[in-house]
Length: 518
Ligand SMILES: Cc1cc2nc3c(=O)[nH]c(=O)nc-3n(C[C@H](O)[C@H](O)[C@H](O)COP(=O)(O)OP(=O)(O)OC[C@H]3O[C@@H](n4cnc5c(N)ncnc54)[C@H](O)[C@@H]3O)c2cc1C
View 1: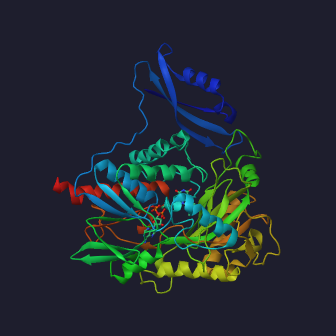
View 2: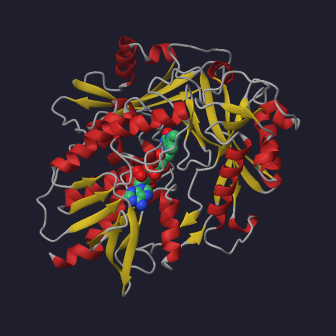
View 3: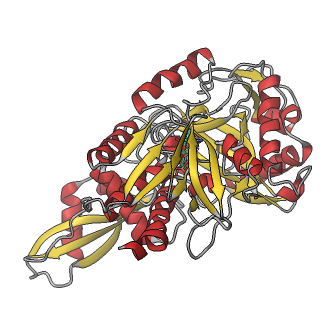
């Protein structure tokens, strides 16, 4: 296999005959019989006026074996080896698949509903402001990943594991482009089917999935979880538990605290979700070009320091929608999603400030961050009228400490209410947001405009609680068969890293608990 790379214009990158000719002209030995070439990587360089794509291909000679994409292979179940997985988000799904590959039976308990039933609860949330505490944008089949943007970039350096996650998603119907693009994404319209096909396969292969089953207690003896309690009634003996409940399962943090199982407060981030028009972001990022059939809707990534704290953009959604992500009736929370084509007229992104436990009241308490998060979400709910409407302010009005009189259209479906952000957040957040926005306006001139609207709060960026585990064997520091997993435990941020952590927890369970029994 030979790797060739070259730059070309966006138009050329979509022109098959140009690409073929460019690949062959790059080959030094023109006489080599070439069988086939495959896209390997594609990234866009829009720093200068002449926007370019960097294209990399793998070229295969005659008789050379072309590596096939991943095909899942499952082992026969090994009697007596089963794992209880709590939560069917990306971590729980990939943990269950990995278990099946190792011959371990996964038994999954998920508090929410299947994607199809969940969709009805999301419609009620968007149209009638009714929050089902067990079925919403965070809870249900596929977890917070199902109705997300499906961005699949990660800072994880584990390239093999990242590839395994992406190839698995392709196997279940995600477009092959996610293996090539530097910033791959799937889109909310495609994710639910991919997720339900994954769960169906887990069941077909002998795993169990129980929807509307909530973990409500753990019974601990001699440094082990002996039983788990489901729905406040059924008690089930267990040999291993993967706790993959995500960062919105506040009752789980409370349960661990009440049961005196070690948890710690950890840094997190909180702020607002800003919305511009996509046309505006395109024009700025693409030097005046917008709605260009050869260019994807533009995105941005911003980071700065303000008074010794990080301020940064989070989960930017080009062509996206701001979603109501509360998990309880008396709170409001924003996040964003976009469809695969990213063809909505809006561009939204979280702009958040890093927070450490020492910045908060009661800073030595493990739940101090959680309490702060809750208090902001509740204050926002009260300020915007006690429905799922969120506080909103034009960005320039926010910078000038003025209440907004009116708004351009917002993508946030339950609606917005004019509220000054200083009513929602303490001064140490708003002052840093203002400083951050000033800096971003230098990086992207015009970013701070009266036409942009900020929505509050963007509060569920990462878990404010750590469920500590041993570095070497992934088990909880006090309980040898409890595996705190992924985002809710503080060990992942995003779909791909959560999926990788789910797989790693099951590999660790096999190594620590089951390999000795074979
Ligand atoms: C709107 C939105 C957009 C997002 N966009 C992106 C994106 O583009 N890219 C990206 O990488 N990330 C995105 N994220 C974040 C991403 O979804 C999460 O990082 C990821 O889903 C975390 O995976 P997880 O498995 O650790 O937890 P989760 O996905 O949170 O799953 C946890 C599951 O556990 C269940 N659960 C909780 N408590 C219990 C209990 N007591 N008993 C039983 N089950 C329980 C929940 O119902 C849930 O299904 C987005 C999130 C949202 C909300």
